[in-house]
Figure 1 (spheres, helix red, strand yellow):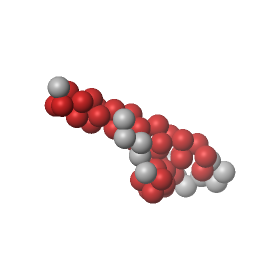
Figure 2 (cartoon, rainbow, N blue to C red):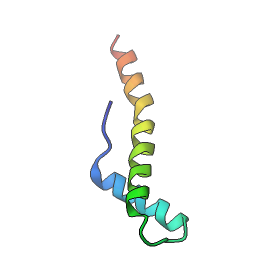
Figure 3 (cartoon, one colour):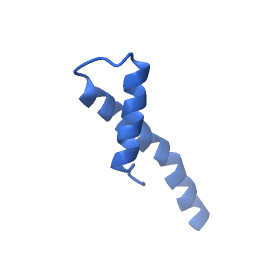
Figure 4 (cartoon, rainbow, N blue to C red):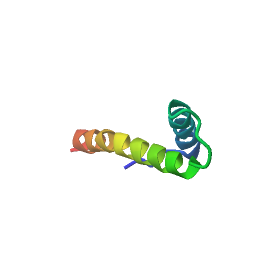
Length: 54
């Protein structure tokens, strides 16, 4: 499974923060949410790559 890069996580976290109305003090929450989303999105890609190698 490909782990998302730090800059990708930060960009997604910023998007989530903006969508939530730019609340103060929730940066960790948005970072972890972004990391979770991007990691889950990478799972199907890894599965497809493994299946193609077989």
